[in-house]
Length: 328
Image (cartoon, rainbow, N blue to C red; front, side, top):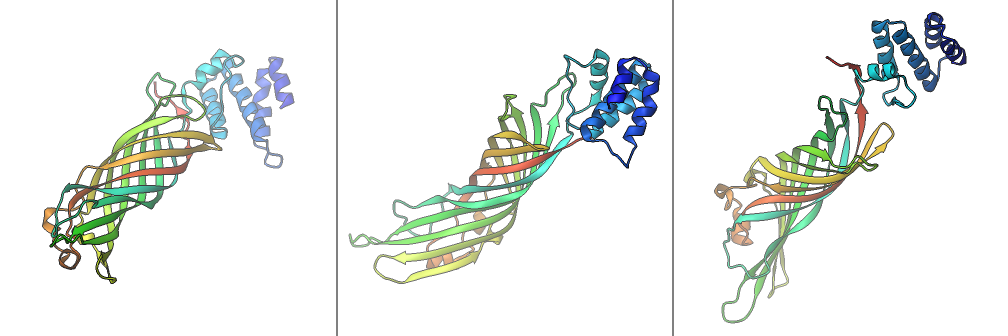
């Protein structure tokens, strides 16, 4: 490296090519990455000043393939080198990684269906469940713009949604207040495909962003677990139902999100808060009375509902590069 730099400083450019190529191809004494990048930079400058553009392009490409995170120093680097660098695609073409998180989901009733007289206090409550899967980022690079504030984001997730049922039945017949209580959980397992557009609004250390999009889910399974309690007896009536056949297999939701992306190694650690609001109903009027035991023995027919979730997740995505000469 010192020899090559000395020859370059003396202007003996025709002597550099064999010296640098010999150093780069020496498998017995390989260069460290920093030296390799410095040698390729000197070689690129040599070809620029010798007016050999094809070789300069080839050397610059090798430099960018060796160090995907090579950065210019406009205060030091010659203008010709900067101009050549800017004719290459140097940013990642996409990012890929894994995601893990938790969510709280709740049923939002759009059409209440009952087979008994409900007492006040009946409601659906949030319950916690998990989500995990893969994530892909595709930065959007606008022509003549040197930023990537917009990113297309996609995921393929196993998303479990769970909510709690707390139903109270009024059994007051002669002025004596009695109630039945139905408590339970419904657990749905979905294969989810969220697609969103992210906007990074500050180019700072944490790269904060907001996002909006849509999620398309396919139902894998659904279970309903209930127990019926009565004020005047001590017995508990428990049951578990497979409700997949009473749920629509496809669910569509809108989503909004906010998060931060922290540079870490060769990618980003991402922390995100996301709200997913159901657009389509999870079930239909044709199946509300299908579960006869729940309807007549426990007083629980299916109300028509959508489902919404609030999720917190962490993910790590690595940058994937493919440097190449830009088309003019």
